[in-house]
Image (cartoon, rainbow over all chains, first blue to last red; front, top):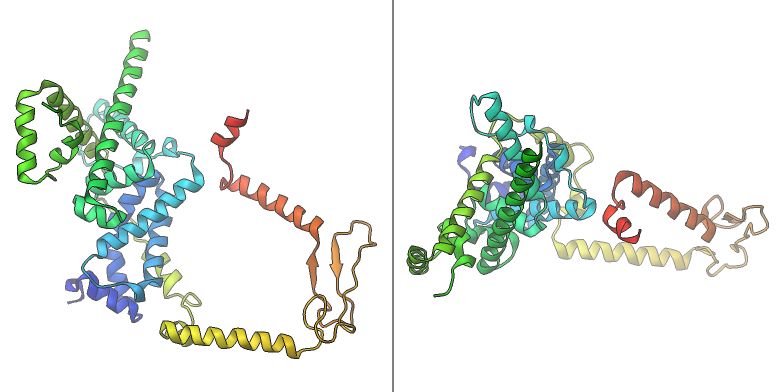
Amino acid sequence: MDAKRDDDALMRGVAQGEEAAFRLLVQRWEGQVLAFAIHMLGSREEAEDLVQDTFVKIFRNASGYRATGQFQAWLFRIAGNLARNKLRRRRIVRWISFDPATHQTADTGPSPEEALLAGQTVLQVQAALSRLPGRQRQALVLHRYQGMRYKEIAAAMNTSLAGVESLIQRGMVALRRDLSQDREVRSDAARQG
Amino acid sequence: MQHVKDSLAAFLAGEMAPTAASAVQDHLDECRTCRAELEDLREVWASLGAAAPAAGARPTQWPAIRRRTFGQGARPAAWFFGRGALSRAGLAGVAVAAGLGLGIWVPGAGPGGGAGGGAGSVTTAAGTADGALESASLDSPWSGSTWLDSTQKSRLSDMWLSAGQTDGLTDDPIDEGSGS
């Protein structure tokens, strides 16, 4: 029965100190927050810390939550703010240490060549993503990996629909530029090699 | 005809109103430049998809989250945090007033002395070799406590700065690089 409780109902339980409600909420959303955090931070370890920090913050602010069916937006607003704070603090991109073993693609059974190529693509895309400004990255990650619509992203990022459209458009164009430059560098290197 | 490059991501994502999407489609039918741009963005979209994490098995963060929320000592005191905002503000006000009242009532309270300043006067250790510490005289209500003078504070701030550099919080290679 608990599994059917919607997020707002669970949040009411959390505000009253119901551990079971909080646990269910964590189990329901932690995977999505973790995926989001990995894409934002590029490090599994930091992403797990961020998941914890996000839910601890949610727990502490449960009494201030207004049940309007916007839990997802609230959750990702908190996670997004925490992620951008972390990025601001460190300013050092750690995608170099990105570990494909903990970040497997959905492909199954690729050949070694395909795996190498796929791994390179993953790294290239992740590196390009990491070079985007924080808000562009956040909007893109929420859209592409969390499957959120522009309206939901606008709520999660506390901005307008036009703002989200602009962030995603600019982010995509910047990614395209970055990836094509990367490709040119590699083909130049291959020619010379 | 005006290009529609700025709307292509929204078009690709199906986030445009039907009439606007139809106008973009009409333009695309006639504009090779915008069609090429759309294809490029489609490729970026696909690349992003290829880098999506698999929804495989992963350890739950619940035990750690639980420790930090429902664990022993993690929960805020219910007698205070369980109340409404007004009650909490009232209790906080009472506590502050009580603290102030105590400060006035206790003779010599505070470094520098209060009502009983003579008995509670502070003896400084300015004559010591390094001048690092000031300490209270034994008859002061502050006896046994110490606080830092400016020399010590600057040493402490140096320690914090160097500690920050080791954990990367203040280590900003971009800023450092621009200065050289």
